[in-house]
Image (cartoon, rainbow, N blue to C red; front, side, top):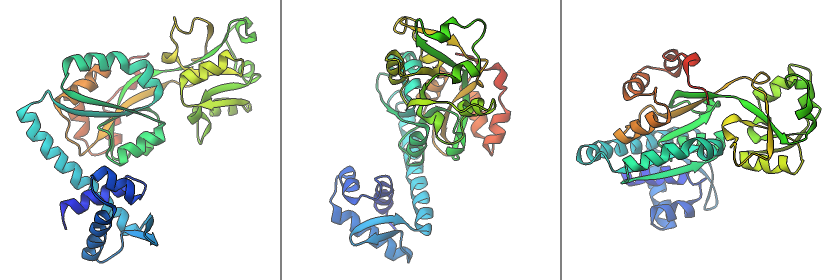
Length: 325
């Protein structure tokens, strides 16, 4: 068994089983990748992939286990290289972060700016997606850190550390009927209008839809999007009432919209930062986490990663004391 075979195997798995795409990433040819995969299967004595002709259609059950092991081996090799690099130069390297549009657009800019000033030699990669897409990036080893809200069950191999809490707000054009209500906004008043909100809020279990259902209301979803700026665009067009994260509201850029307090209608959410429990964290990675959430010092992060489970990690934090954005 060769390290090259494991690298080829992991790359194929991370390329949706497309050997041509994997070969391009590996700077080699399709026949070379196919040959190495078959040699690995011959050595193991079972098939890693199910094939239809020359194409790979799916991964076999034992193949899933082999790929998981291969990814771990490659990560450990990366860790060894990282240790060497840290001793030689702890100010250079790469940092890949997977996060949502809201975090990337409204929370991370000042954090990344200060980080870049401290570590100009670190190559920074910012990858955006839904929670599901970020989880896939994490599983495939494409990111060092994940920053998201909820969906913790999708990150089984990650240590998740709470950063801050936030709540939802309602946005409408000035003059909208909801701006003329006497007293606080109610779920009944909100449910009387079409709604524009995040796409993840309407797929599977959702605290937003649960809040409506708890009052025997079914929201009229006019449009769902993963981008807060897109949601605001359609609110301006009169498509519906917007429900977005409070940190996604810019008092200057969004001055044409009325903001209606809604924190009493929906539960507060916690944004977390996560990393693979087996990964080596470089000094600059610890510093990035501390810039994002000052309470997450290196001592706190190391204490959290050294416990056996996420439940034990959660027990270390008092969520009531988290900063609120």
